[in-house]
Image 1: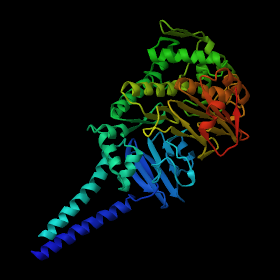
Image 2 (image 1 turned 90 degrees about the vertical axis):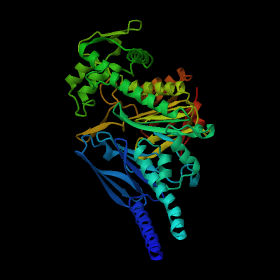
Image 3 (image 1 turned 120 degrees about the vertical axis):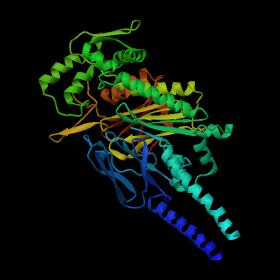
Image 4 (image 1 turned 135 degrees about the horizontal axis):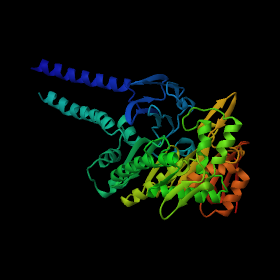
Length: 130
Length: 380
């Protein structure tokens, strides 16, 4: 009986550890992140601190988002206008890259910006007019 | 046994918590950044969790529901839009607003064969809906006020450049000349009472796109108010309009995109109950033979406006006006625009950047703008 208890406990702990690892790997970590949505559905959330390439293939379209040096940009896209590739590198709160034909949005979600001011007394926008 | 129970008791909440994070993420695809952040980071405070709940159907106590944020993203009018509202009626308000956006899009889109405007352009005459009629009325009024800078009849010229279809090319002089004759809003006949519209010349076509989004954001503010919402913010493809203040009583902070660097801002403007609408050549453009051509066409030349301005922001409580004036002032250039503001300073304020990097701000909002740039204040 006691042995089984320990086995069960060990099993649960193992599952918990695996889940923690999965959450970690899938990018659910602290810090500034970008969230990718496709047609309003969240595709994934990725930390900006880790250089990585995210390929989004949905149906007939294909986008490649690259995170590098704390900034995200659209590296490749097979949309007809290609505007998403010209929207630069983003890292500031509320900044977005939008690929309209693919209904794909990359948006920065910053960790410490719930207050209106961050370090350096920088004003953090609620939205961006452009 | 006790150890086992204790373990299970400890671990079940852990599973539930992480599971919650997942489902919330999937279910609430129109969730807010702040909520998502709370879920993702696992650092959601009690208040954040309340926000997510109260943005659903459950009613919560007054204090919590006052701050509850509901945000919805949608793709309409060829842009990406974010509609946000706060308080206990936020969900209803945002849903109604989204419906209204879709309806206006269906009515006004030049590209949609079933739209009122498309049919008008095909037949050369129509009886407009209330929305269409109101917009034509406002557009013709703006045409007069801006001395032709705002011209809804520019559409045939836009087509010659390939802007609506994104099949860009520089039109030849003969084509431009021919299309420019059609681009004359003074040849649009509109009767306010019957809402009947017709064109004096065959081949004329109109596009209300220059004020449609501003009108839409104003309409959303009205819907928010009708639903009992007192705080909200919309961003329709870069066109911003705010209702009231933020829930903490502070003003909304709207960053103005820098025209020459997508990562940078011209500054951050603090507003309440106003629309902030920016126009610049950087929004839509193409290159041919090494020359860049942008989408703000000067109705007098038929070519992209070359007034020395690279960015114009209009701040006004009237979204329709702000939208129409942002392109108009861009076409006018700094001097004429400043003069125009002096004559209409009770209706709007403006922030303009010239190609040589100077920032001009009208006196009414000079104190509300935070910027690293050197500012020239325009006084009455």
